[in-house]
Length: 113
Length: 111
Image 1 (tube, chains in turn red, cyan):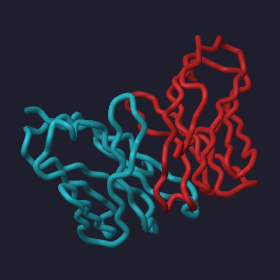
Image 2: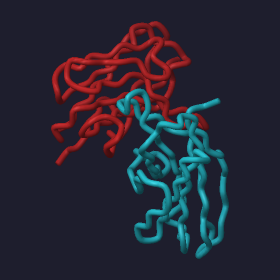
Image 3: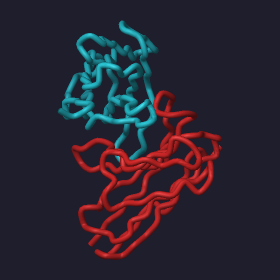
C-alpha cells in the first residue's frame, strides 16, 4: 500500500516562480490536509479539505491555493513563490476529519531563492 | 494564546528513565487528543490517541488527559535511545475537521 504520496520530494524555485505540489492517497480517506513545517514551529495547517468538493483555510493560507481534484488528490499551488515559503511541506489524509488518525506523506523540501 | 502549546525542549533523559511530555490546549470543547512522533527528516506518525479523562496505556507509553485543566501529557517509561525524536501534540478544531499541532517537544535519550 502506497498510503500518501507527494511529489516532488525536493524543489528549488526562484522568487516569483509558481509551482504545484501534488498529493494522492489510496486509502479512500475523506479528509486531506496540507501543512508546512519550519524549525521550532511544529506543523502549521495551510489548507484542508474535509471531503471531496470542499476546501477551507487553515492557520497560514496566505500565498497558497489548493484544489481537491477528486477524492484521491489534493494539490497545493504557490502562485508567486517567496523566500518566506521555504519550508518542508507535508500532505496528510484521514478517514474523516481531525478525529481519526492522520497519515502523512514523505514531505516536500522546498527552497525559494 | 496558541491553540496547542508544548515546551520545545530539548528534554534530555537517561536511558531507562521516564520521559514526561506535556501539552496544553485552549479550547475547552476539544474532545480528542493525539500524540505523534517524528524522527528527524521523517514524517509524523501516530503513537497515542486519548478521548476520556484519565490514563491510557499502550506498552511503554501512557497518555494522561485532564480536561478541567486543559492539558494532556505523554509518559514514556524505560526510555530508549530509539525514542529520541520530536513529539507532537495534536487537537482537532473547528468542527473537528482541522487538525492543529503544537510546536513539538524534542526528546533526547542518552545512554
